[in-house]
Image (cartoon, rainbow, N blue to C red; front, side, top):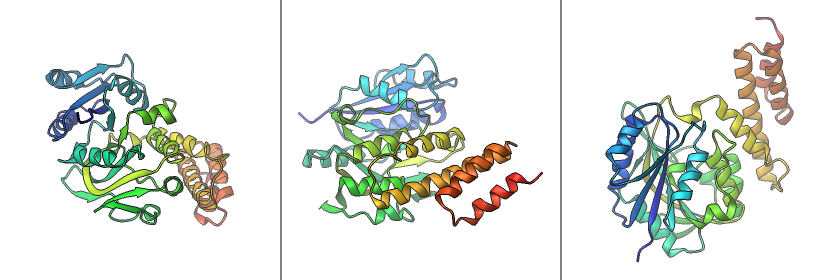
Length: 308
């Protein structure tokens, strides 16, 4: 029998997108398939949308909002019955053939626990842009072993170092073995954001990953994206600060200092905008301590000292 695939979807106030997301998953050619949706106490019409799909999906509603997708993801993982699990966001769209290609990869390479693909940003005006087509230099510099046309094995240590420098995996692009979260731990529920990057860093510490060089989902770009919230900066800072005492290569250490310097600067800027000049100065100084040749940080610190 082919393996059952469980698509786990956390959702919060995405009623306007959710039906299209569910339809894109239901149109996948792979069978057997189950869809598990966890509603994070939405206050919009999400329950009504889910009710219309009650005969085709499994869904539960949490009693209170968790402020981020980690707990709903873990809840869905606990309900999932599939040997393989696809992680998907409730405002994204699966491209035809997504599951078939990723499941095929994992079947051919049983020692690889997770595979991901490329995706497109889908803007409100209909514009699309491929995520990995430009920029993402750490990803493009990754050594890769071609397993089949446009399908690659990425070695654990290389992936980890690149992930510290660059967030190149779209969460909705992941299909993994159900045993993987049990091996490395699930999504960190203390994080309101960046729980996916934290998870991938733990995975890449121990395992090689697979990559399919094709657009296999579309990510909606809109003002309600959780990564645009100010609290997301604190979550990303937490994830990176945890790596400080880890055994890092020189490359990863330089990337970590760069990322933390950027985050501290951003937090200093937001603190200055809110009028908390003392807090802004503390963050600017932390940023400068990691990147002393950044004149922008020095100028911003001076501004924080001057009267408005």
